[in-house]
Image (cartoon, rainbow, N blue to C red):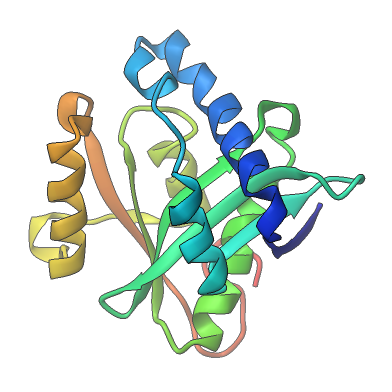
Length: 180
């Protein structure tokens, strides 16, 4: 897999990746998540123009996964990372996160943060295996509190959710278990 910036013409393909990646939520009794619409093209384009929309390209240079992020309170907040099921369990998500970590360090940001479902095996437990830690109430920054409030307003709190963080070292050494 090659990680590269998303091209303008492939943003609809990222939406297709998102739809496919969401389908397994149906098997967990989360059909609302499985049926949730992917980020709109204008949102993907905003991230792409900001240089924060990356694609994991397969051998034919087609998107097999993608990640969008934005700075929040001194960290790079991962808004979405999705991998098409045909590319699952091949390190695609990990490679996208590692790329985001390198970009964050280059921007002088100190961590990666994200919000995710606490009990979905490929969500919080996966991120914990990569070295992310769950943040408790007092550790939430104002920006993360805002994001969680927005998620709650969209009904995502029907299932337990958590904020997670991994600190990024300045030395260029690998951050926890993320290759860097």
